[in-house]
Amino acid sequence: MPVHNEDIARVFDQIADLLEIRGENAFRVRAYRNAAREVQGLSREVAGMVAAGADLTDLPGIGEALAGKIEEICRTGACQALRKLERELPPDLTELLHLPGLGPKRVHALYYDLDIHTPEQLYRAAKDGRLRSLPGFGPKTEAAIVTALQAHLSTERRFKLAIAARYAEPLVAWLAQGEGVDRVVVAGSYRRCRETVGDLDILVTGTDPAAAIARFVAYDEVDQVQAQGGTRATAILRCGLQVDVRAVDDRSFGSALHYFTGSKSHSIAIRTLARGRGLKVNEYGVFRGTERVAGETEASVFAAVGLPLIPPELRENRGEIEAARNGLLPELVRLSDLRGDLHCHTTATDGHAGLAIMVEAARQQGLEYLAITEHSKRLTMAHGLDSRRLLEQMEQIDRLNQRFSGQGLSFRVLKGIEVDILEDGGLDLPDAVLARLDLVVGAVHSKLHLSRAQQTRRILKAMDHPHFSVLAHPTGRLIGEREPYDVDMARIIRHARDRGCFLELNAHPERLDLSDVHCQMARDEGVLISIASDAHSTLDFANLRYGIGQARRGWLEKGDVLNTRTLTELLPLLRKTM
DNA sequence: GCCGTTTTCGGCCCGACTGTTTTCAGTCG
Image 1 (spheres, chains in turn orange, red):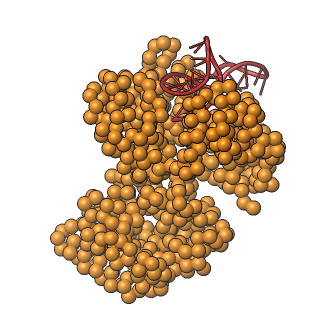
Image 2 (image 1 turned 135 degrees about the vertical axis):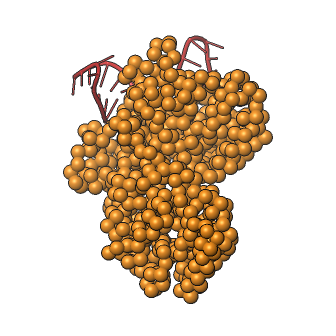
């Protein structure tokens, strides 16, 4: 059975949880957590490195012991150390650890003093008043646990970035209107453009922090206030989204923004770096002894530890600090670098606007070209095009382009298709028709549960097709709703390189497919990425910003992105020469 | 358990808020 990086990370996180509950050395626990994060963030499969005889201790945070455990997991699919822990502690105990308000100490007490190891047992004990017999557990703690458990039963959820934006933007506007408020910025994973966010971290500067906090808890979307002090408050909005607001002095803006942007792992790395220089970094500034040496801007914080400004999207402690130190930070792609969009639909299939309207919307976005890529006939639900209807649309597009050139406009509509990749790797339309298109985008929409080997083979074969150009939404995942299908992405990327194909980064907020890690893999292999809206309505072109966010998380530069090319640069790339 | 321009031991990021305390432990970010 193939072992993936996620499997190894899960084992290490589980070990860390159990060690923590047992009360083991906190730094040993941290070592397992660091290792889990390191493995998960790697753009290569560790199992492959093991097979190739690589020395895993070269990886940061992996020493002899953890390297041995990784090799064991890759070889046997299991880890004796975890098995041993699970014999001593019930594995479901770690579920309690993830409830808000419960940390290792309390879970320890619950298990060893009251023999509680499931959420259900905990709920009963809270209801029976048994929790109060434990030291440190009072009536408020008990009530908080009951609330947390009720929320837990209705499944804790993360918000997709675009959904979070809908709540964040009006709240920021509300806070910014407060008296004496200077700046309001959403930090945290939102600013780092994570595909989902667990909560919003909002930073406020101004002359009256307490007033800003008071204004926040008075916001009419606030459902319940969980904590409130003079400089910080936590509240839950009616939609269920948690919001933390922190107010700091203006001269601490940079260090506070850096600190609250995270990631936690990045912040720790920066603080460690600072310690080595005899500095202390906290949210109020950078200090040498009691003397403040930086903190007004983020750039000053980085400069204090000898680094250039690292863009928020890279701050995951996945090599960005090393890259910054060596002057190797990428010049990340920006929204304004995009010259066109290579994936959209119209009312001919499942889109909500006609061809001319979609094209006009793309022009209004400042794009120079737009590929129309309808579904093909197998996708009957979407009224997919057969050869005849596709040829009709192509004529329509020709007429539209003629009109543009007649008006002296340089905008160009490209003739494309989002053709279904059939189960055997064949394409859903005849070669003779595909050959007449500017662009063939291929996608898997059926048989999502094939084995990894079959699914991979299917896609590789589609790429072998002479007209195949871009693999749309390469893993098929829907965030929070549908897992990616099981494919060997490393092989697909190498094959794309060999066959002159490209991968799409689908910018739809439900998809954001490719992941950041896969973007990085593609970049390392020199495979260009098409950042595409997959627009079904005129409003959907605005989603390109989320695609750019994801691309930046994947370290992509302008040159790594297919549709930053001018039309004259692009067209030859779309015609495979083999 | 990891790591090294304070090296093979003794460190390992730092502060706010809450609840149950009466000076602080636990949790969180």
